[in-house]
Image (cartoon, rainbow, N blue to C red; front, side, top):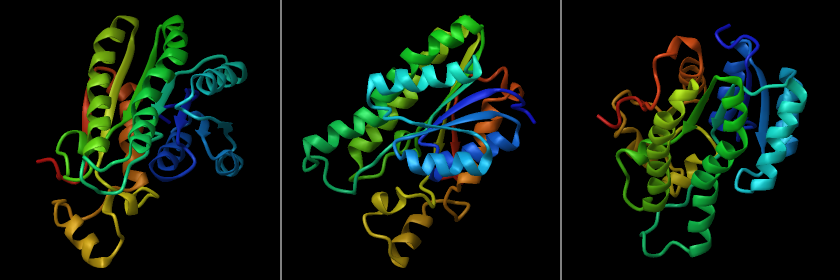
Length: 246
């Protein structure tokens, strides 16, 4: 119960790593707002877990402001923000990615961090406390070829995490990140380009522990970093990657 009675928002919380984080937060006693572009999926998970669902587009400022207001109106505070929502692109040479796809990647993976900060940091400043967790990627530390613009968006997120941590420390707001390796989520096929036994074996060969990240792995790391057990930890981008970045 490390997050007992904490109010948390998890973006992209209806599936994949986000769902794993939501489930662990609930186990740890948090009251969770499951924010997702897929409002129907968020609603189903919220009903199952007895939590709150919010339909939100994290790339849209008005939608993010409405999300923050809805959570504040219901709970009166926001203690934890997890910026988990993200998208990727299929592997391809960096000079062939369409401009529309590039823009969408940075809207969801980078601009969203700015938008949620603008909406929620003032709440945390007024409270005098808070924890923000950005879900980045090993791609931001040790890039794979043909995923250049996705890698760059996650590198941006890691730098933003460190800069936010420095600026917000005076307000007792901690900011950290986690860097998962690819996992059994809806994005896996996107990263691999094609999901075949041969491609999976090649991908897994780059991970010393020999398996993909799981939603439960992300939930455990997120619960730790957002709890008082990590009260002296800020500005860290923790690799939860089975050793891939070594």
